[in-house]
Image 1: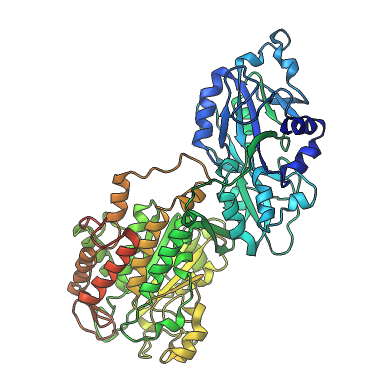
Image 2 (image 1 turned 60 degrees about the vertical axis):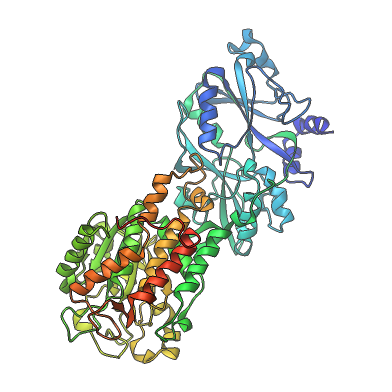
Length: 627
């Protein structure tokens, strides 16, 4: 039956396309035929870039059949249209390769060539339809849109080329369904490698695909991109073999293998899709299991032993969105400092700096650039604190520390962007943790309603300006509603928090993470980043499906674990703050406490609970030492 179908498909390309998404459900394959001398390198290239080039079968030299994929097949005739390349140039298309079996006519016989069969995304279009996800290119009777990206594949030997992707519009409410369905079919490219703004892939115009046909986005659709086997054509063009062949885009080889999802996959490893940013539009993927752990961290830090009513400000998944955005970032600026004790010198409190250092430590271990931002009045003290943290092993190395001054209307833009150019930001994420925030009247208040504006630099201006810079995310972390970034929930603060009408911060952040104590949220962000960087679904998405699947070494895991917060490190750093004269926020005590809660047992137990979720049961995989 399938042999007859292949014969019919040879007669008309459109028949093949209709079959590609039909309920008959057989895998299809992209095809590449290369000289034997290049075959080993191309196989390595496929295995190093598994999302665009899932290798289904490699033939022997001259083998025209492929028994593991299709009985009675003949590659010379079982693709409706082939592309012919000479020295890296497409010279023509043909309906058969039979004439190339004669070495006297071609100079390079098929007998000295190797055929590669690669998975194809047409294999999951039927599954999408079954899941209720519209496949717009099928609805419009068009070939799928395919785009050359600015993302480079992992090169092997002579094969160096950009990643090619397919784009399918998906309604925003069906993104999770589309991701889960395609994740189950890694032999057909698996889950998407990008969801959102095409410019982030270097694609400038969705109406002008490099291969295939333009497909219309309808209101409510999100562009979703899967790795594409046409990447193999780009590999041929770049490597310039004397003679090579490929399927013509959209004209696939039909196999006898049922198009069924992979069996034995843990459903907890299936990815979920979360909105990270509106400008530019960016979604990210994370496994159900990892998302569940980060949500558990979020619930834990919502404990409110100080009875401040912080649960009223809680917004679900703000911690997860913050961690995802930081995972996608490359350069992060962190600011803290709440001078609540204006009658003391220094006026700062012990909540904020430990959480800031915990986040910075993990971000640095993951290869991010980190800058600490502080008030001018506190710059010398904070430099000394950083130096002491390095000396005691809380930090591995010093972190750059900068201040911001308002010198005119463009000061914030020039601080955030090179030469004040919003297309060249210095940072892609600003984080404020327990940082005094500007109220609606322009003043800065502690929770007692006392104005501390004279002790605060206008760092809020940076968060306001960042709202107009594409690609710069902001996070505010707080435990009372008067902290920078809590403007996102200011109406709740005004209604539900003590003195809320007066003290509520008016400056919003993209993510507003609340906790019983702000330091706890800083610890949770560090733990969440660790979880994301040990999540295969998220790491695959970050790498666009390129590179070998990560095999994280024990040394790498131990390094990340060392950089998690620990009871020992946080106790050590809190002791340093107390020696510098920094006091507990609620009581003003110069003691081992934060917000009136003693380090033992309250804060130490919180750290242990967060680590148990992150690393497993008590006593297992604890962070090592203080380094």
